[in-house]
Length: 290
Picture (cartoon, rainbow, N blue to C red):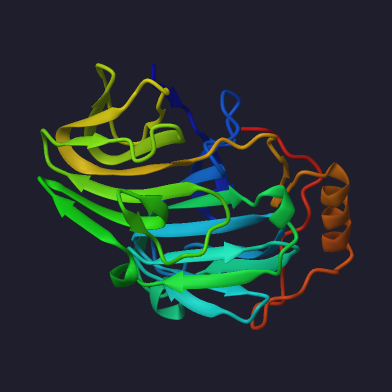
């Protein structure tokens, strides 16, 4: 039977998020080791997202917006704004530093942010690859339209579609808008699967779920029934075994590697972000599990 994983609220540089993964009941869904719902939040002129430079290892970050804009800068020299429907995919590998803020045009006016950010763990044999960054516009992503269902495949493979974003383990991440009465089969019956309604209601196994509920499907759940028109994210992939360690922004199968990353950040050994090197987020000495 499907079950809801409840999130915990966190403050990230003025942006309140609901963090569902990692969760006490389920640390990962496929390769997804972190899932944040950002907003929806409204900001007055002069306030907004202000996530100072910080490091990552051993993972890829996935940013996807429904409303608003975020300015991404990283230690590779990338400097661009993500808009709704576009994808930012940053692979940290052996180490990267980045910040998430806003353009002057956004910050200087009233604005709104609404979106999702996920971390995808790299397989152990790829954990130390070279860092990279990919930005893909929404019109470059595969789409599917049939019988009241519209899908956009963001990352991975599903329903005969393949995303242009290079990923490192079997997975899928899909944005779906569907009309009442639509039926959607799980894309990969043997892979772990979760759904997250942005609006509307869906029914799985005779139980109805609504906006903001992160629903982990059971192996026996094969079909999602749309009972109220809306939009939802479907994500998942092959089960990770073993599950890597997670401390702050670091993912690794080795505790010693995480200790090294902590020391490197405190010692200033991570690369800096061009154009955003005046401040940074200090290392967190202690991390409380969600």
